[in-house]
Length: 93
Image 1 (cartoon, rainbow, N blue to C red):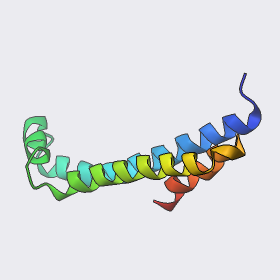
Image 2 (image 1 turned 90 degrees about the vertical axis):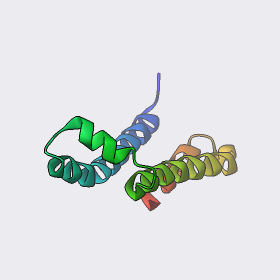
Image 3 (image 1 turned 180 degrees about the vertical axis):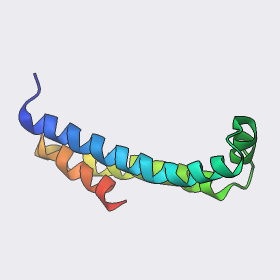
């Protein structure tokens, strides 16, 4: 059974990730509205080869994974406090 600290850490991760997801989705909602809520035209726009918005989102995801892995590896000797230090990567983004 997880203790209170672990549950709070998981909740903090969840809140941070939901906030980031909403911030990333707002421009996509604008594009979807411009495309007349047509899913095919929206997906066609999103799948373009030089779509900078898609590239930025992939880079953001890659950076978050790398920073979390690096901080977790560097501070794994701290035990349960390592999860709190890993959250710095999410907050810093």
